[in-house]
Length: 261
Image (cartoon, rainbow, N blue to C red):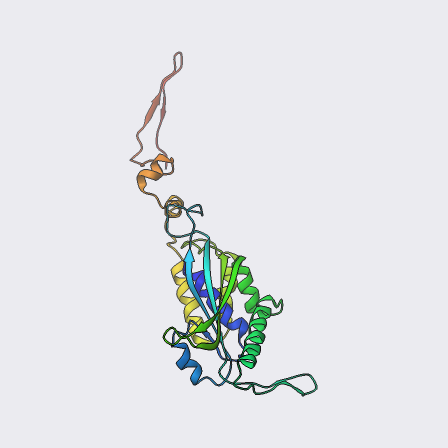
């Protein structure tokens, strides 16, 4: 479960960038200690990561390790270190630089939580559209406040976790599903050299072997051996040098059938 997970993580970050109170402070799988990170952070933050992936036994290609639909556990971390002015359309400050009270931090976290969810539902946000095209359903959503495990003190941050059923990764040589092709195309068109390198690497790995016969491709997908393919009647018969065959029928002249290339 690699390519879809990669596209999911990038789509989340890009769907949120510049569309919430966090502005450009949106990160992919940042692993710095939260307390230290917030101390030097000038604005609210959003962090996206995929924490777990599970592929059920009854999925496609059950015996194999590729080609199955998966369930991802996605984590969204929101945090507030300092205030930020929010103005209405007339320039009036609705929520100014927030104070050091729990209530004001909570208000900012709630606004940020609402904004990232709205961004993923936005029909005009191309990265959000990509995310939705890779996800077939969203399961249980749970969020908890971040606390310091040593002191028990609460941070102005929340962890939101949800399950997402997603498309299976393609096998090498497969025709790419529309959503995955759109994801790779979006990376190539973004202009970020890092994204372009990621897309090029995946396209190279997904090419497959052009001279591999169809039955070998099927064998790979079924995750089976030559013996297994033979049992399914899928291995072509060995072709030796053809021999002439004489067909004899009572009352008729013998007919010789020769190999004619």
